[in-house]
Every structure is written in structure tokens, then in C-alpha cells.
Amino acid sequence: MIDLDLTVVWAFVIAFAVFAYVVMDGFDLGIGILFPLFPAGRERDSAINSVAPVWDGNETWLVLGGGGLMAAFPLAYAIILPALYAPIIAMLLGLILRGVAFEFRWRDPAHRPWWDAGFTLGSIIATLAQGITLGALLQGITVEGRSYAGGWWDWLTPFSALVGVSLVIGYALLGATWLIMKSEDRLQDHCYRLARILGPLLVACIVLVSLFTPFLSEAYYRNWFSFPRVLFAAQVPVLVAIGAVVFFVALARRWEYWPFLSTLALFALGLIGLGVSMFPYVIPGAVTIWDAASPAKSQLFMLVGASVLIPVILIYTGYSYWVFRGKTGHEGYH
Amino acid sequence: MLRTADSVSPLEAPAVAVSLLMFIVIYFTVFSIGTFYILKLMGHAPYPGEPGPEREIGPHRAAGITPAPAVSPERTIGGRSAEART
Image 1 (cartoon, rainbow over the protein chains, first blue to last red):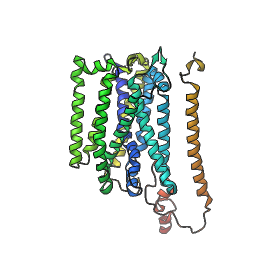
Image 2 (cartoon, one colour):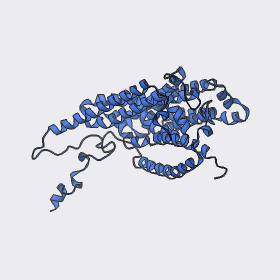
Image 3 (cartoon, rainbow over the protein chains, first blue to last red):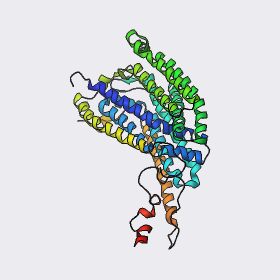
């Protein structure tokens, strides 16, 4: 316990929650984004069926990330939430809309096109808002003393919009590659075609965002290119290139699992890249994780709880994915 | 120790008002559609000898509690099979 820095541990717990959220909710938001491209009927029903058993457990991680931030880094929470109020509220409203549409489209076939539209709209709003939130955090938040001191539209810039659109493309690709794993025949062929378009788009977005980021602030530039750090940092783009190659090979040879897994790897590398840029800041240039940390006693108390609960959540989540493994049809119980 | 007035976040009233209004609009829309849907279901009175629920195409349950149509009559207490056996 002595040489273990609880604050760093919590930073990793929250980073893990964010990653788990992206891994699990990314593909089902992506299916929402792609929904209008699937013809109504069988394809849409299969697509929905493939996520129906797991989608509402996926948002657990959003709660863990947000709750963990509040408990372990209260100052960061107090600054980030007012600064990003608009996109965060928009995300919540989007998630409400899509959750409701998910349930009602089966019960109310007469208005199914409306519910499907709501499903797509909610998914796109939630994803855009998440991307914009991330972009706005990366580009920096105006802090004065211990509170947010910027304007109400600070979160909306070309950079944050770029990150928002990139995330929409990324989640759409996760959705398409998830369906490649989970579906057959026409829907699967359709998703191979979509992935062939979305894959290059996502790679282009990753390159664009990566080129932009080091020039947002001097600190980012130093974090990527100063000597000891560059040895670690330089591996990230190399691994991204390898991941992209695996993705395109898998797609060309129609391996069913690898397109999804390699897309997840790209997301993981994006998160590591984010860590390279930001660490040890939680609000870039203004607040480090140690500035924002709650007292060690509270962090320890919560870590005890988290170290029991996180494995439990992982086990039951893993079990539910195991139960619903394999291909899904367009009918039956899910 | 800390008065509510001292602990407010630096959000201006219009920002909070807009978000509150959005929540009200969305919740009212969703819940009124739900209420309307339930009332519509209740509008059909049951009659003796009406056909049971059909085997629907599609999931009976996306999340949450299991609705009646998802429970097969064979598995319920006092269902058809139980009657058949006696």
C-alpha cells in the first residue's frame, strides 16, 4: 500500500471504465447509427436482436466512470460538468430517446418507422455528444481558481466537432463489425460492404485527430515528442498502423471476428494516445490528477468497494455475452 | 457548513432552464405515448373464448420484466397442460 499511489490507481480505474463503456456501448450505439441503412424487416430485426440481451447492461460503465470521477476526483468533476453541461445533457436525452425506442418498436408495430427514427436520432445525438465532450476536454477548459470560467459555447469548436464526427464513424464501424460476427447472409454481406467504407473513413479520422492534437497545446507536443516519452509514445502510431492492416486483411478474407477485434484495438490505442497527451492532467494544462484528488481515505474506501464490484460486474457481463453467443436470428426470444 | 447558495455550479439560469425544459418535453412525450398505448390496450374488453396470444415474430422481451405473452401457457400454474393432466 505504501508505494502505491491511490490517485494513479483511480485514474486507471476511470480510464478502464471509459474503455469498457466504449467497448460495450460503442457497437450498440453504432447499430443505432447504421439503422436507417438497413431495410426495414428482417435486417433491422436481426440487428436489434443481436444487441437486445446486452445493451442496457452496457451503460453500467458510464455510471462507473461518472460516479468514480465525482468520488475520486471531485474538483475535476466540479469543473468538467459545468463546462460540458450542454453536450452531457444532450447525451443523456439521446440515451433516453433510444432506450425508449428500443422497447416500443416491438410493442407498437404500427408506428415502428417512428421508433426506428427515434432509435437512430438518439444514438447519433449520444455519440456526437460523447465525441464533442472528449474533444472539448482535449482542447482545454478555461479554469479560474477552482471553478469553470469559460463561456457557454466553448465546447463547440471545429476540433470538438471533428472528434464528434470521428466517434460517430468509429461507433458505426464497431456496429458493422459486431454485426459481421453476429449475423449471417444478407445482413452480414451488407455489413462487410459498410465496414469497407467505414474502415478507411475511421483511419482517416484517427490520422486527422492525431495530427491536430499535438498542436493544440505545447504540453501535448512535449508529451509526444520529448525524449524519454517518445520511446513509449511512438509505439502507439505504429500499433495503430498494424491494427489497421489486420482490419483490412480480415475484411478482405472475411474473417468474422477479427474486424471487430481490430476495431476495438484501434479504440484502445486511441485511449492510450489520449493518456499520452493528457497524463498527468485531468483537465489539460490546469488541473492534475493529484490536484483534483479526494482525500486518500475516501479513495481507499472506494477502492475496496470497486475491487469487489468491478470483477462481479465483469463476471456477470461476461456470462450474459456467453449465454447469447453465436449468430442471432430475426425472430424468437432475446 | 456549506449553504446551497454557496455550492451552486457556475451555470447560468438559461442553461439550466433549457435542459429542464428538454427533460420535461421528452418525458412528457414518452410517458404520454406509453399511457396512450396502455389505454388503447385496455380499450378492448376481454370476452370468453378469445384466442390466446399468438406466437409473435420477434423478441418478446428486450429488457426488464417478462410480459405475459412471453410466458408459455404450459409453464404457468393452472395452465393448459396442468388441466390436461388432471
